[in-house]
Length: 271
Length: 266
Image (cartoon, each protein chain N blue to C red):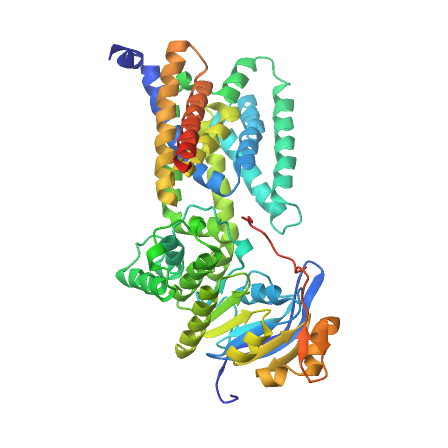
């Protein structure tokens, strides 16, 4: 029992744990749409595309989360804009913007000298450095995103499953698609602190992919995915504490282990 | 017929993708409650016409009026049974979920389905003979059963116009029969049905009107008016063989070359 409580004696561990669980749940829920709509590449791209925003915010001494948020939303909307009329395929548009934003971010960072530490935090997360203000920001943004996902459950389901039905029901499909991109972007921004941009994509995809194997309706898939996201975060953080590994990696590896278990279980069941 | 108010009017419509026009200068009118078969060779633009009628493909010119108002004014008025390859069959939804989606236009985004919505869904499932499959994943069903699930969704939508793209291709006999019975039932409910098919016999025997197209309107009217040697020759060209006893054969071997957008083929 003691080994469970010991890390929680530290306030930064309490905050880190809370932040990881919130982000784990948020990524897992948004991840169901990422998995079902085949947006894994987009999630990964989005995570890297926020780098210039973070760099600019750092240069001008602004809030990193705000900088990342602005960059992510800009990139999300640009992808929607370039691929809207089908002139360029969506994954091509993503590839172009992803590379451009990442290069811009690295270019900006290369002009600074003291950035190495912060850069590694941004890439791989620094869950133990979550300040009370950060935690509030993470909590509020996550709640907001989850609330919107809940409110738009039906239209999101329809545009994901059957775009033609969305057209006959006169749903504003274009608007909904952009909204989903913005939510995805904000999710990546929120995960910046805990798992970092490099690993955010994994937290978007892995729990949801596991849930996809275990469920056969959308809302149970979301719940199971959220549960896996939360459990991975808790286990990952304890592993990180006791084995002294980077928290983001520990969380993602835990989620991957759960995925492998789910995959094997599904295999043995179907035989 | 001319005294019935026309419920669907297509006026000088050009439809196509990008710069390419697939159907040119199309004009016809469908009286309300009619069963219309759309026939024509592969790539003649049948699916393209459906996409325009549903509103997913913008018109290049001309206009489409439903009940005298332009397309898009009425919510929910048109239901569409998509071609199999346009659906992601691995999506985590049950048959019941799929049919309930037909009610989403009425339910509103935030409300739960009402008792009437649930009853309509149950009735539609029963009518299609798939009540026992309601809790199954859509991906587990056979092709014919999947089509019946989508038909059930279309009737749950309570449309005024029902569009079906090739519902008789590649499905089992039960599904064909259920679909044909549905057409008769819908006629009693004054629902207009427009269906594309390769089966000319079916078009001649089970439909009130036939629309023969090949990149333009070739003929439109009752089966007797449309299925003449001249019209068929004009639509099918070389794939039409006229025999001495007056019998005609239409040979259609080749895969369709019409543009389809595949979401995810199974």
